[in-house]
Figure 1 (cartoon, rainbow, N blue to C red):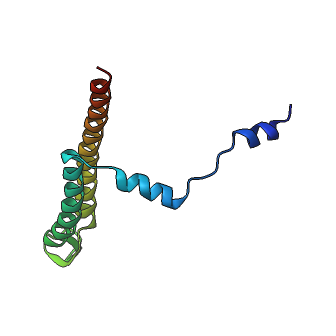
Figure 2 (tube, helix red, strand yellow):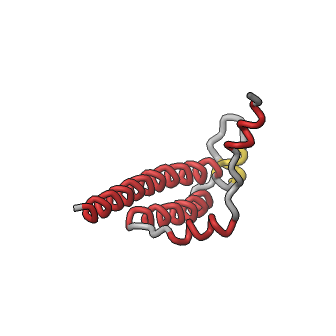
Length: 113
């Protein structure tokens, strides 16, 4: 028994791009998943806005001084808002996916009865 022959028998071709696009375009999003996309978009935009509104101090007037001489874009705040929005969006998308699966199961059970 040759291991390479077994691998060749079980090997599957990669799906074509047209098949993938057909599967993705036929998928319908529910309210939770649309809300997740809105949260992604809002967190992306608000991260950029709040990173600019609340700048970080680039350099101070002295080593222990309070006065900020130059301000920079607050990348940390922007990334924190992006990560928080991503986590909340993923949670909503996952809940929406669970709801979609449960409705599919429910419709299949109703057809059998």
